[in-house]
Image 1 (tube, helix red, strand yellow):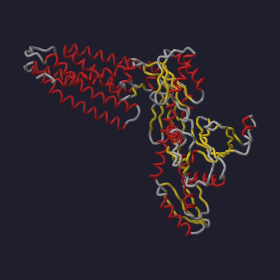
Image 2 (cartoon, rainbow, N blue to C red; image 1 turned 135 degrees about the horizontal axis):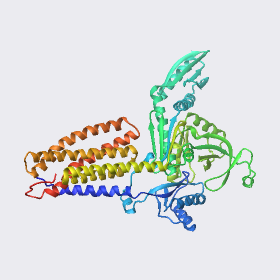
Image 3 (cartoon, helix red, strand yellow; image 1 turned 45 degrees about the vertical axis):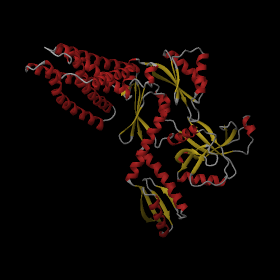
Image 4 (cartoon, rainbow, N blue to C red; image 1 turned 90 degrees about the horizontal axis):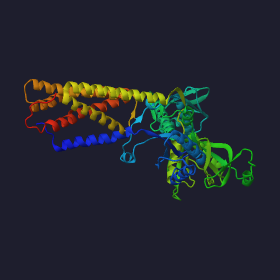
Amino acid sequence: MNRYPLWKNIVVAVALLLGLLYTLPNFFGEMPAVQVSSARATVKVDQSTLQQVEETLSQNQISTRGVTLDTASIKVRFADTDTQLKAKDLLQNKLGNGYVVALNLISSSPRWLTSMGALPMYLGLDLRGGVHFLLQVDMKAALVKTMDRYTGDIRSALREKKIPYAGVSRLADQTIEVKFRDAVTRGQAMNELLKSMPDLLLKETEGGGDFKISASMNPQAQKKSQEFALQQNITTLRNRVNELGVAEPIIQQQGADRVVVQLPGVQDTAKAKEILGRTATLEIRMVDDEHDINAALHGEIPFGDELYTERKGSPLLVKKQVVLTGEYISDAAPGFDNQTSEPVVHISLDGRGARIFRDTTRDNVGKRMAILLIEKGQAEVITAPVIREEIGGGRVQISGSMTTQEANDVALLLRAGALAAPMEIIEERTVGPSMGAENIAKGFNSNIYGFIAISLFMMMNYRFFGLISTLALSANVLFLVAVLSILQATLTLPGMAAIALTVGMAIDSNVLINERIREELRNGISPQAAINAGYERAFGTILDSNITTFIAGTALFWLGSGPVRGFAVVLCLGILTSIFSAVVVSRSLVNLTYGRKARLEKVSI
């Protein structure tokens, strides 16, 4: 009656073992570390960089607790923060501006735990300390930018179809006005624009002797443009924050036009602002082959020129005048050259950019054009090809002794390097590490004290079954922390509150079971039958009460945001683990204790 089949006991044992393994990393804490990552897309962190880091630390007699190389960075662990700070300054001076050397914290978990994917939960801003930014996206500027692009596209479309027009201009009310000399030409343009630009609302007007077409974006296109700007900005911010070495940054949308950025562990607000506000883009300029490069190398740089070094190592004089900038890039994708099969980056320009590029290449056939990547305030000449012929259509190919990975990185940088719309920091908060540690201590202590109080009450009231309930409650906390660790969730104060609430709710299930068993015993049935009836009949009530709470938690997750959603996630997971621990783990322990006794006279409850 009260015996589980072997497989069910094995499931419980395996679940407890896995829960213990994946909870363990949270008890090892973190140790100070330095993270070395690439400062530019074209600078790689590889085995040679790792060797350089190790040699630098060894020569300066700085001992480490381990050096690891992953796909994007090198992480060096140290015993204390003094050594960490000393190593950071040393490595930054040695490696130069091509690398970002950032302070970081890395889990102290043993390597065997890390190798099996057992990692600790991340701590939120309110527990670890850090900086919080609320950024407002300028949606009006996003629409202006989109309308500017449409203005260029309309010019290009009419020129390609050889439809003459008197002028194209963007007005202050976010409309584009196209003027024509006669109604026939206007009609031809209207047919062409209706066909090629379905996102525009077109209207024919007349005034001042001109025949005009007024174009504005339809509501769906406006919404799409604003959503694109917001998502593009979030992607860009995420790329930039990754360079700070923040373990678990939170970058998420808030409302229709705001972005929340939380950087746990970061106390340098100025550095964070610098990273968030940085831009990366492309510039196309003409090469000056008329002046003597050797004289420039000796300091005699001609007026209006700048001296750069090409990626192949040869010096290059480049004109200061910018022909084209990255703001005209509508897309960038890695690929291969059709003739040489070398990795290249294919760039698509918008209408205005395509026209500028076509005119420039037409007027400078036989000359060299330099393509510069501007990143972190530093310019690098990627390539400087000779213009063989006029290039139209807005498709540009960048090549320059790149590897496939470099081509991917450059394409990513060009796509996500710049913000789609300006943003302004409208709220800024800094949470100190001491306050975070205090919050952790208070939250941890409240859970411990609550757990002890509940355990004492259960054991005093239900004796042996109270002990079983306490063990089941411990298993519930173990499962919940393990699941949160496996999901790599970020634990915040609301999350700790949800854990405390879950502990309180989990004991309700055990109380229901124990009271049911007592009731059956009072009715005079045998202890074995009472245990069986207690678990079987209490299950329905436990399920009903937890389902209603689960529905409430789901609604909180669906409608809430930020801390509310974090609370809801922990609550819902806690409900699932509490049902398993109260119904399955608890009964497994009771079955192992009483199930094999053929004649059970009484139970301790």
